[in-house]
Image (tube, rainbow, N blue to C red):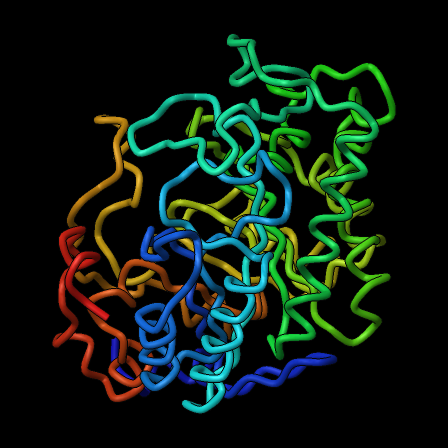
Length: 376
């Protein structure tokens, strides 16, 4: 792909509270590089480097909100406490000094705290169980803590406080992580939400928890601070899972979230070029844009030839070669979505936007998981 065919990708983007020089977003990617759960100078340098490379908006790795069950992974940064917030202020300052914009991704792992996958830890609150909608760690496995109304209210407050802190620290927006089988998505997904109260049952009811988080966040940050919500059909526990199977169901799902105050939907798919429903070539972001009229971010194997998740081997892919951007620019120019999130390709290629704009895509380096240990 050459710069002559990437005009749409490099057009400025404007919305209330956010102006970007192009449509390139850095996707959130967990790094485990924050000892003691505090982002340090290395984290600031890592994000600054992507801002210097021309990324329009950086969405950080998942950061845990102030709730004892929010975390499950070692050296993942928190978004609360004096030390962690001071670290995040340095990150913001570094990105802004390079001319970039940045949003933290606020995260609660929910049932993933109790599944026991490699690398899962339960510090700093080892006696705290996994908090889940219905006590299910997966659709067929119990032993999580079924959240009470008081638990729900506490988590809603934690997300809203995190967003208020992000605004205070100078971040340009905030993203709420509602995808991939973590807590908010566990409320969305019928497989893990078996509640019989107002938070369970219909797809509209299953959005209530997320809508309350968004509404509480909006109340704290005011009307002009952009709120991004990331959602997905697939889960880490089940790649074939679907929240909805038709545009009509998707509309029922999205309406309460848009009404609550979501400004931008980040529509996570594994392959951006795949249509979401039969009879149309629109992907998930395309359908979401059409239904809500809200700006949308598309994501999924941008400029790489392998998925992040290897479905056959059921593990995380360790290597992916550069690949064509396929019809990305055409879909963007057509108005299917507004922004494009690039993930793994930005790890070995921090200058990815500048390289694509200059038609130097043949110089892109392959992604290799070992890069995570050595590259800024």
